[in-house]
Length: 445
Image (cartoon, rainbow, N blue to C red; front, side, top):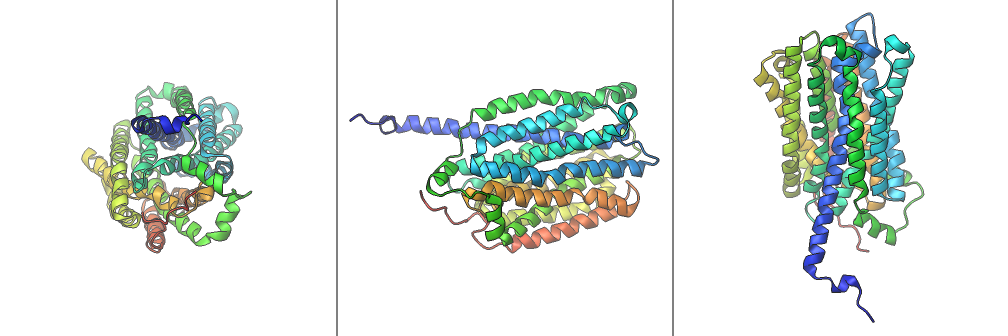
């Protein structure tokens, strides 16, 4: 009888093939995640600086900003829906195909924003269409995050989940950096051309990135951990129901931890950024964009470091230290950002994003992955992460409504610190073996 190829291949060949596959997984997860976050946060930055008045002309700046923040939140409201639907099929039929689908949904929605008529051209239909596309973006990103980190986590060697899941997590700051840089470029256009057609260019250009991402992701093999688990254990007809029925405490803790993670972004990159840029000239706005870009780059570089530290020290200490840093930086942040001093603005975003948020995000994915069994992970991550992120997305809207001015920052900071306190209690209260880097091993097939 002939030996199978698996038994006759030299170990060095198998090792090289395995190494090549794992590099492809990390590359596909990171690139795809970066493209999706570029699309998602392109709207956030553009809405604050350019397109808000084009779609929501109002009698006051505050009214326009409230409408803009509401549309920003609409994208997050759709995220749990996208997470549950995409997560369901990700648990039922596999991670790989769902990742290509989320990229297509997000990319198409972003491209269509670039061809929308403005309020002046189409009246109330314009903001209605914008909200609809923002919801589609939310559905896409809702299914993206869980799949990207799961592919990396389930390919990761033992004891390296924190490091490996930090790479797709780096897609967030890379996408934020890319969208910020592109907005800065179009802001250099003459104002008439900018508002006539220039604002559309970043949205239209995203379609090329989406094609690249889909091609890269289609070449990746399915998660081996998922394939092994599916061979030995039947997948529930409705995985999200099993998650909510059997692990409600973990779902609540995960959602609160995600609330703390996401409120940092909503506060620093949306509300405080908006307050500092309100009424400013192009030069001052450029300083803010520079600070945000440097902070995003610092986070992209620090995420693998923080992920590796969570493998060594545990998830909880790293996450809690990140919450603490962001709470401390939030107090002087409004004054530093409003100062117009480049070094103060850059320092604010580097501390908040490159240190605080990087610590939380670098350990967060593995914290959640280790809480749930393989057969329900996609759905579980969708429920926990997306629910927390959705609640956090309303913080700029609520803070501005309470303050009655887009320039007031005190309510937003209080909201953020309160959310971080809840998140810290949830993370600190998680039991050993549940998101601390020492999770119990899955049963062997």
